[in-house]
Image (cartoon, rainbow, N blue to C red):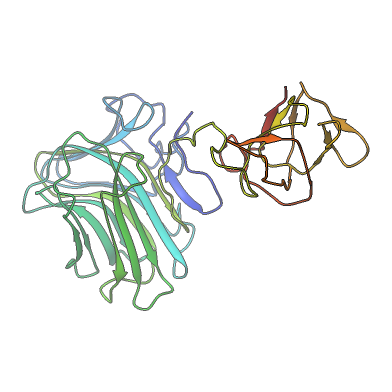
Length: 339
């Protein structure tokens, strides 16, 4: 299954999964092939630099974008007239992507992971990697706003995720920038603040601008959104019930007063009979143990007598929502197996 973000906050994204062979040049025509996502509106190369698909040590799935700079630059661009859909002037504008470099940039010409611009191509900000392996966040005049150096130099061959957020409603524009290893939710370093050296309207987003000899980098799973994107493949929550005494807000296995298992619950919208240990659907009929059902349940339980997420007898039942367990991706209906 291709690595993609989901949700209404996602504006555009691309994971390189076009199904094309290694070495095929990235173009506006093919960059949305397969399950890659949104096509680049512009692909620009200069000198002998190349931007191709590679299946050699891809970051996610089977393909990544391979940028090779040899005395020029290679970029993929989304514009307000294309993938971005409009010039962004209000609210949050967020972006994220994954990167792994094989050789670092020359000291005179850093690699720009992302450059946000006005619709006319005037720099709003950029996030770049310096020759020392340090990430630097820069503003409209290319002067450094913050250098993310406390984590030390980023290692060649390691997958990193960068995230950038601009609050375009703030005056001056506020920012949050962070660096992670792979799918980690713990930043290697993060910084936030505001700066008059940041633009307040985003109409173009450029990935991979570089003018550096003999520099190679892979990028993958890039995206823009109106809220934070986060890791594209977060580690799943443990598929176990809470270990503490259950209260409203928990989800847990429940047994009836005789010690028989009633079920393992996520979130419920039906009452549980304290006498029969089955779920009342609200119309006088019941869901019976040893069947599999899809439903949403809300329930209130007396926490007394509950230990390690196991109920000893069912007490009061009302309509108070609790989190579902096992955890599932957002938008996926919970399923409970009885018995």
